Amino acid sequence: MSLLSDLKVLYSLTVAPVKGKTHAERMEGFYGRQADQYDDFRKRLLKGRTELYQALDVPEQGTWIDFGGGTGSNLECLGERIHRLREVYLVDLAESLLKVAEQRGQDRGWTNLKAVCADATTFVPPTAPQVDVVTFSYSLTMIPNWFAAIDHAYRLLKPGGYLGVVDFYVSRKSPDDGLQRHPWSTRSFWRSWFDFDHVFPNPDHVPYLTHRFETETLQECRAKVPYLPLVRAPYYIFIGRKPLAGETRQAPPA
Image: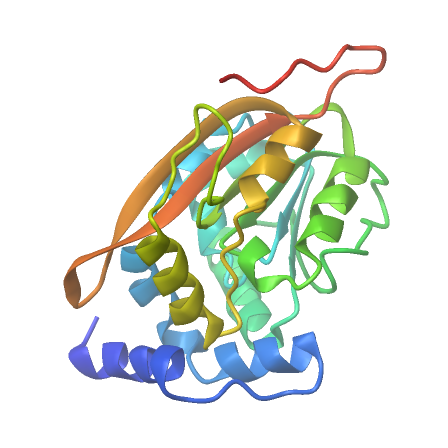
């Protein structure tokens, strides 16, 4: 990727204002001017996506929803396993990114891919009222009603289905036992930094996910930031399972 392309993305991230009356308008305004350069830059910034998508089971003839899936680059992490799925719904509000996703699907022979412009808090697949896997890759922090999105994902999943999330976050001031505690400087800096782009790392994401789902995997990590060699952005990887009918939910591991 060229320095000029990087500068265009950095301009969008740090200088250009995000305009729009609705959430959909803001998303399209933000991503529309950087859709062509979106994947290469974020591959270096958004860590943990490959680990998440490769760790999730791909059920034969199953249905997968990727909420906030953007250009579809997340799905490349599935490799040839994507062809096991009957349907893959890539749901986003930025139509410019969905166009890139549709072209990617055509180029790679993903005949099961359906790119849909819709809201993550309300979308229901027309052919599958319940699904096997739901993922959010760096999208929960951009969904104003993120708690509604998680609740909706819970309802969409079949009993025993899996939710996978990777995203930026900050810890609570006093996190539960077993979870990392970020100092005040980390909690304040990253919330202020991302606020400019309508990205909101929330200290309640991880606690709410572990409350709603049986925790299978939870990793709290740090990612390098391009052109800022000493800066590390906190992010997490979460895989949770919706309990089976009649199954007693276990408390999250300490």
